Picture (cartoon, rainbow, N blue to C red):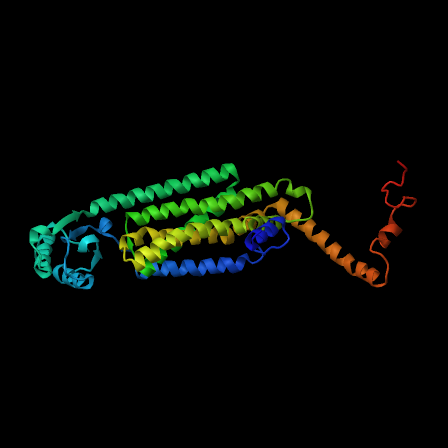
Length: 362
């Protein structure tokens, strides 16, 4: 068995564990700090909305255009007065995207660009995108997001309970905020592909959270009938039991997305991949983080407020205090050379045979 597999088995059996619930305030603080940073980036810098949302024009040059990307950006900015995004396509073609210009301005920009690029004006194709189309996409995306959130809350409240539904909703909002904030800080363009990636990572984040919740639900059946573990203890066991699985699925999902983002979008210069790959990369990482460090600890916090769980915690703590008080006596008995069961032999019922609980002959 591999080391990681052995670690997962030991975590699942409870032989080793990390106290996620006990250190939850640290992770809450980390999440709050990241969220505040994301909100500040969104407030100060704002989102770089793509041409689909702002409206504008997309120009494409013929093949074998002997102009670099940097030169084309300068020509486009000088002709339109707006920042331009230039991408190099196959066969030497250039795709020049300029947001915020209308039809009249587009014709003028096209004429100027053709002269600067030293190509025939007729061979420079232009496609106009109206801002109303982008507004419609944004409205549909918000509607889909709201409907998704409502359905998630209803499903989790029925399948599990309302506290888990609230915790999952908080985790999803946490993931959305971080992903959108990263887009604002990095300055990547927001396109319909970004929206698709954002909705995709919400499903993945929810899946990871439900896996932990399902384990927690199974382990907390008849929890009040025992006095060994509190709800937080079992919640911590559930996280540790599914920890390696969550790490494995997240790493496997992140590897191809990282290839799209860093190799395809960065090294190879395929900028069209950045819009969806960044949202997937950040969202997958944030989703795995929130399912482990946010959702389940929040459920434990909410459950521990119940009167039944408070009473259970008192019984568990009292039993542990009693066991701790008896431990020094047992240690002294061991040090004096007496067996550990000497006390039990003295206080137990007399006449019982050795090795027979009842003392009766069979």
